[in-house]
Length: 123
Image 1 (cartoon, helix red, strand yellow):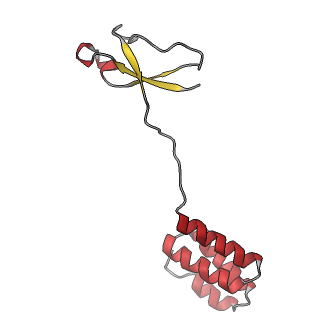
Image 2 (cartoon, rainbow, N blue to C red; image 1 turned 90 degrees about the horizontal axis):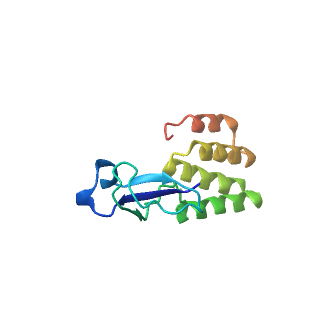
Image 3 (cartoon, rainbow, N blue to C red; image 1 turned 135 degrees about the vertical axis):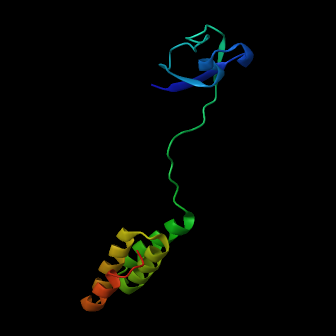
């Protein structure tokens, strides 16, 4: 069910509840609220600010992830590892660091040097 916001049509005659926007959960078929439930003064429906949490991924990060996937699909493990490692250092993403280490192993790098690399203080 949608949440609608209302506020007093005349703020100078409003009570504390309708002087500021207040929310009402209503069915889509319900008629809009015409009066304040507390003081009975006329109210109007207002356009709400969107409060949804939308996480957008920057284009640069998306492009980098696509390049990493392409390198991996082509078996270019050292290229994928290097790019993953660089991005992990920049973004402090520990899962990307793990992905870089896995790609280094697939590329044939010595596991002893990778252990030192994995324990770096970058992340």
